[in-house]
Length: 151
View 1 (cartoon, rainbow, N blue to C red):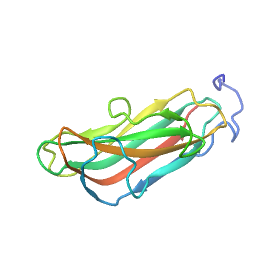
View 2: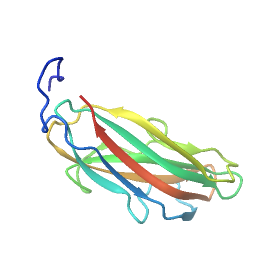
View 3: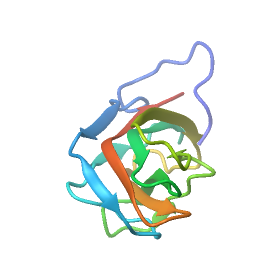
View 4: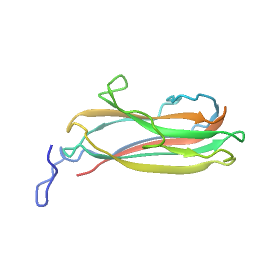
């Protein structure tokens, strides 16, 4: 789809509302080295704007619960719903956040990236996923995800 150009009328269909989800349930002693969604699930639905681009923000409070663990938190995006085709897999390097090992107090951070190539008008489902890397245990104090349509 073409971009919205200068002077063009922008309608509600072009810019659906921003959405966000948050939970501050403490998750202790995470031991999974593969990404998991966790409970309670932090998820949302959004509609892609005419541009097919959104700002995707993931944030949270992470800590190492021993001395050799990194905790990773990243977004996952799927078409249509929880069982839809994945358009973005969890990846701390490309779009996620993480704390270093020996982070013995909660470290709160976020990361915003531009997600492109979405089908305008299509419904998407996004959620957070987390894991530990380099050790056996870590903690999360909060998780959030935000989607903001952009022209």
